[in-house]
Amino acid sequence: MKKAAIFCLGETVFDIVFDKGNAVSALPGGSCLNTAVSLGRLKLPVHLVSEVSDDFLGRRVQDFLAENRVSTDYLRMYDSGKTALALAFIDEKRDASYTFYKMYPSERQLIVPAFSEGVDYFHFGSFFSLAPDSRKLTLICIREALKKNCLVMYDPNFRKAHLDDLNRSLPFIEENIYFSDIVRGSDEDFRLIFGAASAEDVFRKMSREGNKVLIYTRGSGQVTLLSNRLNINMDVPGIQAVNTIGAGDSFNAGILYKLYLKNIHRAELAQTNEKTWRSILETAAAFGSHVCLGWENYIPESFALKMISGF
View 1 (cartoon, one colour):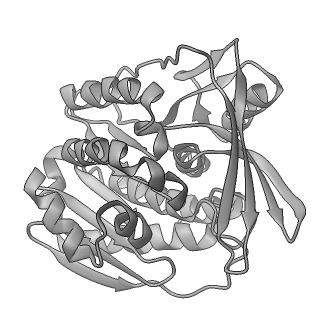
View 2: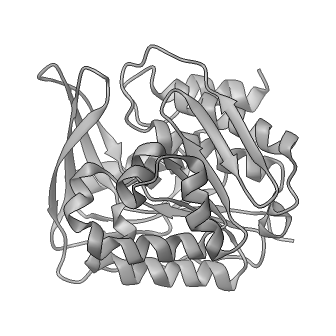
């Protein structure tokens, strides 16, 4: 049987991060790119499904992905337009607010992955999956993944800046949840989307769509996992964060990393027990915490090496 691969679909941007008025880092970003880079540093077979311009920043993104062992087979390079730029401004709580500069071609395209039957993992999310000019492309990839019975994981990554678009986006978010086996989001995501005050409120909405797993995070506080069989609450150790960019994305990478290592595919998901899920959540929390200790959007290479070596 073909070895499993992980496919991450989402927007690619180039992040310039400011702290106290000074630029402190300039690196490739985007929610699913961040997840893919963390997995690449762990030497897992991961592909980024995205798009960048064939300009200076786009070529830098392409080189950076290759340096971090992320396959660019499904990274489309377009000729017209520019690679998207994101300015991130760190506040006193070490959270970021963003200003985006985007100049996409008039016609958006993606290279649709060649998924393998029953063994691959497909992760998607953020505003890329909701935006009018990329929604159809997202649906094509989701449907191809489902045809091949891939395990599908979704992170809405919905922020205050998107609230004006919520009425249009909500049906798409609900559709994304319907298609997904695992939904991982923050309390902020679900408060903005559904007005939900708890993980239980969110799961009641989700469970109407079938046998789902909800992973509900609260920053540096508790993590809750809910399914039709399980109700798990775990405390996450507090840290002194430098910044929180990429924390949720790397949490997602931790989930995918453990699913891959434990060979848990879509068919096995419903039978996965509490002990296994606790191990997955502990790893995911460690991934998220380590990202907050520096200025990169992904797990540090030193941490990845420790994970690979078993220390």
